[in-house]
Image 1: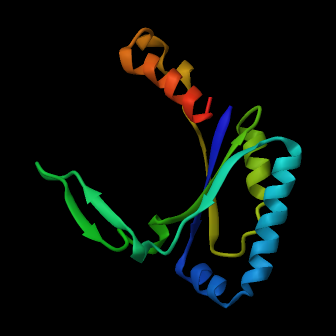
Image 2 (image 1 turned 30 degrees about the horizontal axis):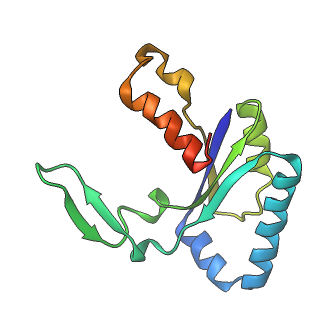
Length: 140
């Protein structure tokens, strides 16, 4: 099963991270990533830039509304993610607990949906196309 570990941080954790030596953070994250690679569970992972560099597309109106900058409070934002392939939620949680994050940080553990979640729609044109797309993208 695939799980996404979604990284969140409160304002204090964000400020603390700004004062940490960058190379120390890179080394801690690199070692964590390497341990997941060696265990054969890491599929992908990315950090995200500051939310102020982003945009929000809001679908509340008839036409989508685009605004710059962060959306909502900092505790609602996420800073990065990992996608891992593990046997179950408990194993995903165990990997999340090993992440080199400090006080004020949280990891949300969510299962990534797969074909079995859409069995009632077997034969759907786009579900069939998606199989080919995943093969082409190497994300099967």
